[in-house]
Structure formats: structure tokens, C-alpha cells
Length: 137
Image (cartoon, rainbow, N blue to C red; front, side):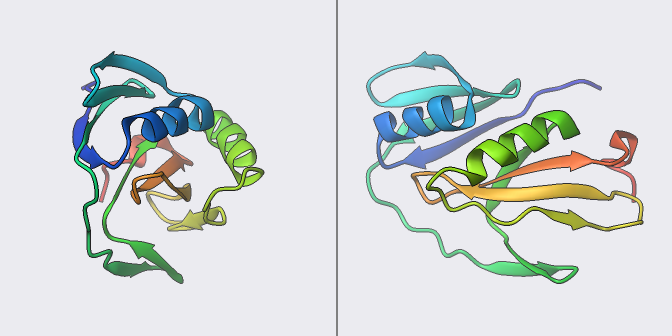
């Protein structure tokens, strides 16, 4: 099944959010108004609605030897796109985690990194060694 996800999130500033996702990540703009914005994130729809300040309690969890944010979202991309994006974002003045390989030599092995967007959301980019294992247990 080839489907897309839709995720709606609050944001502090439409302009800062637009700049981050278009100029930094390389995503495209969809429909938008003065108060909300659709982002095409690798074929998936993110909708940001300007709400002003908001607060999330960022709890963490441990996977392998890494402490990760439990509140995050992301996309799964090819290893080529993943490498290019990581290299570009890591060179910028952004909060980007070091690349990591999770579930190494196990079913579901994947590369991952997180970047903090201007609203305080952690965005994860993954690339699976074997894409057929994305949902396998």
C-alpha cells in the first residue's frame, strides 16, 4: 500500500516555519494562507497552524545506547537522499543529532538523525538498510 501521511501541528511563526522547511530541508509549499501552511515533505503533508507560544513536555526514551525524544515525527527516505540531507544540515547552524545506526545487524536496521525545527519539533530522517523491513517485527 502506497499511502501518504498528514500531520497537523502548531507553529510559532508561519514565516520561520516556511523558511526552515523550504530553504533548509528542501521541501515544497502546498496550499497556504496567512495563518496556516501546508508543506510537502517527501510526498507527505504537514500542516502548520500559527498559534503563538505553546509547550510540550519532551519526554525521552532509550533505544540501544541512544536517548531519543519520544515526541517527534519524520520521514523514511532512500540512503542517497538521507546522506545528502544529513551532510547539508550538519554543516548549518542547526541542532542536528549525530547520525546513528539503530538495530544494527537486526531486522529493521536503519540510519537516523534528528533536526530541531524553529517550533521546537524534532524531525527524524530514517533510511532502512532493507526497506521491506520497515513494518516487520
